[in-house]
Image 1 (cartoon, one colour):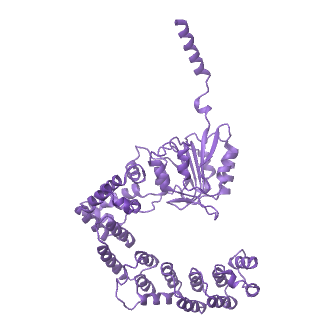
Image 2: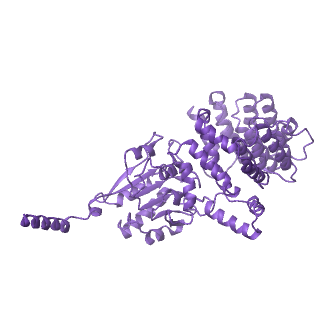
Image 3: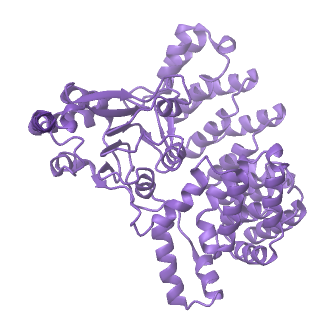
Length: 548
């Protein structure tokens, strides 16, 4: 027995000596999320040997839940490559019209924060984000003067309040880099771009130069490659690492995960929202987007459940927190932020619809009293009054200029609308821009009014203002034959190639059966003005007419 035991121990020792290491025996899994071009993925595939790396494309074309599908398939990624345009804060997307795939960062947060997909990113050593601004350190939003005033009212000195504001913005600014560090927790290497990234083919050729020079030995090792950074240095490639539990802002991640984690109940999340609201309002302010998005997910059946209705009642009955919140909201410097805070107060049961109406009317009155207002204020007024519940907030009054008239028009003023439409056919580009902003919210639906506006636009002098006015007319998808004939006459008469291109933009969206004719093609060719070289809207219209 003693000799048998010695032989077994010797055999085990020999096996340990001669067995290959587990890391060398196993292939690394390179996961790819290709929502735009596959150029970068293909460059990696050409140079990473199949003996050491296997590729898994997570996107399943035509399937909206492809990330959840990868979770169910128990995919575990060692390297992740994300290729797609990035909007700078919320989503990776494609510029290909035939593609419907996209990747919300909220979905990445859900995967990162929930236990529903524990394996997908759990062993990541390296992430490559091929999109503009994926690691831009600039905060998307930051606290403003109302936060400083709120901190001073709470007893802080002005200097201390300003220091807290800086720390708050640094910790909660939610820059692209912050969000990626939050999503890819504990990942040692995250590559991305601090500004404009190279297009797919250029990124692929840069990767090929790197691989031809240095090989594939650095990929998936969990260490930053100075050589890769040097290769992409003309394109502002940068690198960071995922958050850890010892990160100064780890508490921010825990707050974010309270919203993103799909495991807690709605009532539990409402309890967390109540906790946030009881903190200094400056901290609540930085979570405004997440609180509002969560409340929108609570449909009426959910609100009627005992647990949720009790949690909402607890918040609604918290008088001291309500008072602090409303004081902060009324003090907000930016009207758009003030409006969102007042809407949140209504959703939390702190303002009745009528009380919110009065608060908004007061705010809009203050906005109207400003000497200078612009497109932002017009957009805000029209957005707030989408349901027309603020119509009549102001009595009729002479409109001193188009911007103030447009705000009044958004609030139901017929006189303001008439004055704003006059601005659309003004020779002032600024006034045309204001009218365009208004018409995006309140388009012309009356046929007679549209004809009058079209005739006034046709009578404008050739200019940038006329081009903008035509573009605004084109958003109405003109089908009126009299207006189309007038535009075709204008095409023949105008000396401006830019005006002709704007007219072509309207005609190309019109019903081709009503306008397509050899005579129109002849007119477009005969009367076309010289334009800068290159394909333009007139060429596109001619191609469409000739093929119809």
